[in-house]
Image (cartoon, rainbow, N blue to C red; front, side):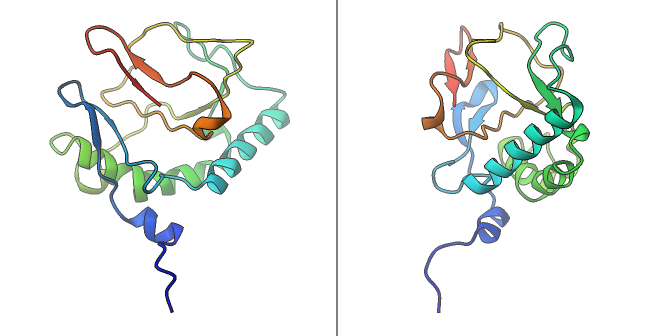
Length: 167
């Protein structure tokens, strides 16, 4: 007997369809409300793992990125999160990136190499925004772990001439 609902495992095996926010600039989002990349429980787990790692090491890093410092922890320094990230990359993110950039990313994302994966902790009192900047990679991904209703503002804004904000 089936409930008609997809399990998390079933959702994680299907390739999400990219939604073009600005296709000529290569800015895409996913059908996040149809099938989010991570369940709310998985997001809460990832946040808890990052917070526990920060507590164990005496806090979050704040000086890893010289030009655009964030309060963050690299995923490779969170031993309990790293295998979850690697599984997510191969099962969900890699195939999605291939759907967005089929001439750059091989099927399944097999040629994707991560330059810098990190969990950022934003605090409106400490850091209200990041200055406009260019990331050091051909493709950048922002994966929100908090639901839209848990914060105000936020997102990634692409300035003139694009004027697109992804949340």
